[in-house]
Length: 333
Ligand SMILES: Cc1cc2nc3c(=O)[nH]c(=O)nc-3n(C[C@H](O)[C@H](O)[C@H](O)COP(=O)(O)O)c2cc1C
Ligand SMILES: C=C(O[C@@H]1CC(C(=O)O)=C[C@@H](OP(=O)(O)O)[C@H]1O)C(=O)O
Image (cartoon, rainbow, N blue to C red; front, side, top):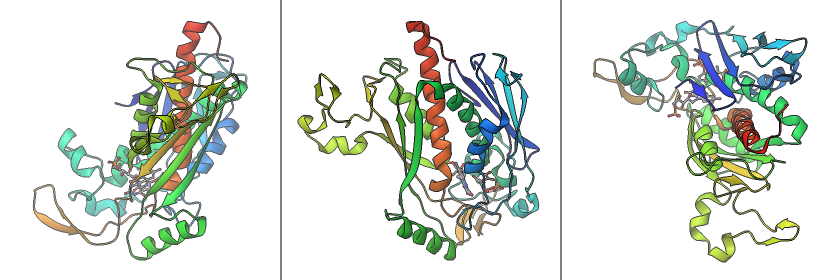
């Protein structure tokens, strides 16, 4: 499945070591002011090579708007956004042609398609997320007039919660040829009450699906999440008075519909699969082998996921806003 969304439909395309990665957005309302400069800052936050604690692949990730914008405004036609790959070094991946990396998608893509683009994981590479970020930036442009803002942050790395300790965990893993995971939190503020579509199109289900659809995400919780299982009803419920909700254990969603409070989501991000440390694996003939993975990799994916998760949240919310507009008659512009 390469398409996301019911109303604001995004189809991403491209491979990590192909010519380019991009997205076609169909369903963006007409008349939204949009320029490359509105999208580029989000891609700049996501791109690799910004610090020694992430992949050393140097990609400028300059976005080109190919269609759907005329005289600075969206036309209602499909918006095609393109980013050309510039620093692939595919030869570093030659040994992966016949070998499966433990923890990556190599084994399962081979099982599904009977072949795979082994260069940097092809489409299973986290590089595909640049297309989601470009689409999310357009969604955020649409949401801006409504006072909706979305912010993410890393709250834990390998058990550490203080910024310096988190960084030390990544450095230690890098030095050991290993990797670490972490927890990312995303909060959407300013969403109106009433977004989401019960029974099967619940807002929390849509958010969980969107977040789980990001590579390396192994868990999603909303509000109290797994902690809710350990609370009493009187602790979990959010009392209401004439001014609104007095707490937000629900994480901004009840009955699959937004309450108008902050929507609070946390993602568990696994340690990066591609590591230098030697591990056991098999080749495509089933022969047992050992592997130490080359190429340029993130020692920790959690910090890189922050802008991606923000943009996935934006895509879910614009989709829900456009759906709600059908019922309530207001326009998203
Ligand atoms: C932004 C981002 C960056 C990533 N960087 C790497 C990386 O450098 N090396 C790697 O092996 N996996 C990386 N991943 C994770 C793999 O793409 C992912 O683990 C793989 O596709 C298998 O999917 P799964 O972990 O969701 O099962 C990254 C993922 C994202 C979203
Ligand atoms: C290139 C990016 O991240 C990549 C995500 C990734 C992976 O396996 O997910 C592996 C590395 O690159 P390659 O696909 O060349 O192996 C990372 O550098 C990017 O985010 O733009």
